[in-house]
Image (cartoon, rainbow, N blue to C red; front, side, top):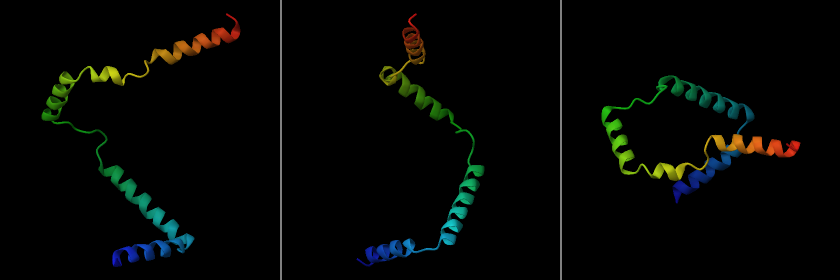
Length: 90
């Protein structure tokens, strides 16, 4: 019960913080994000065991990927060119 009241009190106190305090908090959070982006690797490095697991999973369920193909890349292009021909009367 005390934790809930403490949470409500902090939430109400947060409503009345000054604009300067909010801007300072945003500045600190942006700095933290920049530091995390610099530290994190650009690419995820996979170990050999990860590759082995992915290959095994793909072999077991390769047909699942066909269900995920909702739209083929050439479909929107051919549909758009067809509708442009229809609108020009060609």
